[in-house]
Length: 309
Image 1: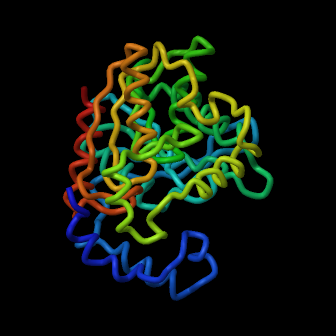
Image 2: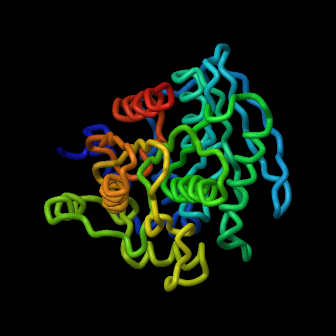
Image 3: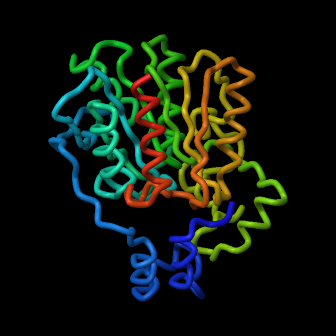
């Protein structure tokens, strides 16, 4: 497949820009990237109620945002946004839009978690502790029956979601009914792309790429080192037996796609049911766009179907 035509027609906006770090210091670069991120049509909040609150955690209160559709079928999802463990919040589309859309499409209660980012001295395991605390709170609210809640996340949030599921398993707690992982970042070192995929990725500007150096930087910032990593920091190294059915949404044009593909093979070996949707022509983080883009819409439908199964 080729890059999605809508994205391809906007690549000129990123010409000459450097990597993601430049967005924080160059207003022109930030403006051009924002224009690149503009969707074909404006997204409007569907028919859900939205409530912000905090829940208790070992490092202090954890902010969450709760999405309730008008009608539910007794299911729930706890969702964790991405951002390389250092960026992201409850307002980003990958948190807000995804949560609202899945609440309506799956008729499910969705809880989006504003875990502590790895900034200002915060490191692993604090983000995992926050995710685990939010899950414990959700499980104890009585809003859904035991076994009716799933867990999921995007990119770095996928690592936190999977780490939380592993911690629940290892502590003998009830497991989520399903795990949803969007373009996950789960392994270090990150597996390499195959030759054909690597050649196609060469057409993308640096702002849309993950280099080995940038990946190492994310891990070092999150854990504090790149050697001897705990298996629940980068959970692709963990024993995966006994996990719930897992559904993957992968971006075709993504340096991190091999991490999701490798985990699928690992789950196969561990006897864990899994299924994958590859968003054709999409780059990493495509759920930071709205469903007016066809592959985003299809990705959300895939996750909604996984929640309803």
